[in-house]
Each structure stands twice: as structure tokens, then as C-alpha cells.
Amino acid sequence: MGAAGSRLEKALGEQFPEGERYFGLENFGNTCYCNSVLQALYFCVPFREQLLEYYANNKSTGDVEDNMLTCLADLFSQISNQKKKTGVIAPKRFIQRLKKQNEIFRSYMHQDAHEFLNFLLNELVDILEKESKVVTEPCENSSVKKNSNGPINGQLNGTKKEPVPTLVHKCFQGILTNETRCLRCETVTDRDETFFDLSLDIEQNSSITSCLKNFSSTETLNAEDKFFCDKCCSLQEAQKRMKIKKPPNILVIHLKRFKYIEQLGRYKKLSYRVVFPLELKLINTVDNSDLEYSLFAVLVHVGCGPNHGHYISLVKSHNHWLFFDDENVEMTDESMVQTFFGSTQEFSGNTDNGYILFYESLAEKS
Image (cartoon, rainbow, N blue to C red; front, side):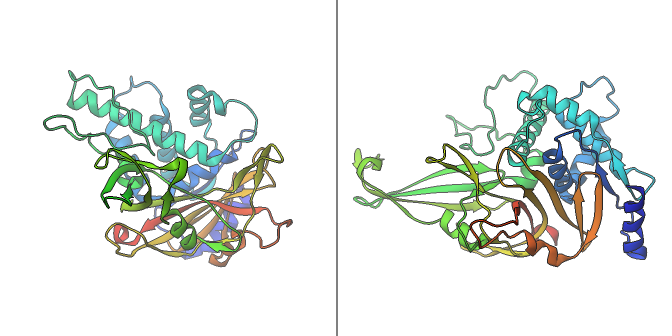
């Protein structure tokens, strides 16, 4: 990457951001899924800063056993402390730990970037919460486990101490509320659940805004799907809808591009054209206020199906867009984002499609 690195430095010239580092990541056979996620997370500045702060505060305890958190923090620290501005780093320690931790990622088969992202964030939460318990509640025994897309821990009798939010929660966690209205007595039942990302169904020639509207659309529960109303003490027809109660600082959107086709007996990739804007207004929140987000990373899946292909990432850093493809890092133009919307044709040669989108709240930025 020597030539590519020097090209990048020349392209940025005096505009090269002070203290920033742009490093490619070596691919160990099939680890593009991991590399693309790591680049997006590294350029998620609030997450990076909090992780490096954690690393600085904890590296003095040399007897700490390796885990996903220490390996990720060590990798981010390696990148940020490089003397050179550009180059390539081999995330060997991180990959070794990942394979040791989860057998899914041990094979040389093509892996899913979204599955990896979910596993990583939940693993970091588990580690941080265990560490927090050791520090604050050495005698308390708790079997509560956090789930990125599960119900929030319910209140027990008396007062229950809320777990201290981790750096993962501070960046990525939002809260959804599931509203169900009984059509007989009009009683509304709310159920909250946390999320680290939103998985959206997609349609041909659509947009993120229309996908979000569909996600929050009202569904009628009738026939075999009737709702048990506590007030009526019986099954009743009802209307159900999902709303965003607390939007996250970093909104991660996963486009469900892989769909199981019964007739084929396998998953098929949907290369539908789905427009994702550089600036996104988040609608359908509980308080109906339009929140603004800015796109800073796009994970792209290249290939025709879920079991083979390649992952690359586009990242925005200091108002410049960069293209990360494993070891290679290049300057690119903002307009390149549009080339990954997808295709309007059912059978198209263009299989380079946006798969996971990272948006940062403009309120958080200011």
C-alpha cells in the first residue's frame, strides 16, 4: 500500500487532518466482513474516543486476559499512534480472538458483516457490564443479560438500580416502543425494547425514508393474530405499530438485502435500488420531532448472493470521503455514495449495494 498511501497523502496535501490516520487492514483470507465493520467503527468518532479513553485507563493492569474489548481497543490504539499517516495494519490479534470467541467466524466461508457487528457490540457490552459489576457491586449476584434487540429489564418490587450505560449504549442504543391499541376498549399497551441497529425490509425503487415509514406503519391484528387485552380479559382485534421512543446518537441501519425464497429453497440477494441520503430526517419518533442525522459510513456488499462476495466501506472523515477495501485506502468523491444505492433492473451486473449505513446525530455533533 506504499504507493497508494503516498497517493492518498498527495491527494489530501495540506488538507490532511491533523492527528488523523488512514490505515488499510490486512485480509486473512475471508476477513473483509470484519475489516469493513472495523473501519466504520474506527471513524465513528464518539465510539473511538471513548474506547481509546477506556484503553488509556485500563492498559496499566497488565495481567488482564485478552478479550474482544481489549483486542479492539489495542487495535484502535495502534492505528491512532502510528508515526506514519497512512499504511497497512494486520489486525491479527483481534481476528485470532474473534475466532477463539465464536466458532461461526472460524471457517474460511463468507461471513455476514451485520451478524459480526451485532456479535461484536453485544460482546463488548457483556464485558463492560461484567467489569462494572466487579467495581460497583462485588457482592451482588445478577443473572440479567443485556440484549441489543430485547426488552428492557423490567422494574422489580421496590426500586431497581439501572445498570450503568456502557460506551456502546451511549453511542448506539436507542429505544423502540411497541404500541398495541385494543379496538374494543381502546386501551393502549406499550412495550419498550432496546436496539443497537434497525433492520429494515426493502422494496424496489424505494428510499430509507419510505423503509422507515413501513417499519412504523400500523398493522391490524385479527383472525388468528388477535391480541390478548388485559382489560377485556380476552382475545380482541387490535392495531399495532412501532415507534422510536429514544433515538440513538449513532443510528445504524441494516438493509435486509438477503431474502429466503421458498421456491428456490435458499436465500437470494435483493439488489433493489434504495436511496439513502447524506442527511436523514428521522420521522415517526414518539414525540414526532424530526431529528437530523448525517451519513458517515456505508458498508457495501459486492456479489450476487449471501454465501460469497466481498465487503468494502466508504467513510467520511473531516469532510472527506475515503474508500476502504482491505489493505487499500483511497480518496473518493461524495457522489460515489450514489453508485451503491442498487439497481432498478431485476438482473443487473451491478451487485455493489449499500448494506449497513451509519448515521450520526447532528445534535450529538454540535
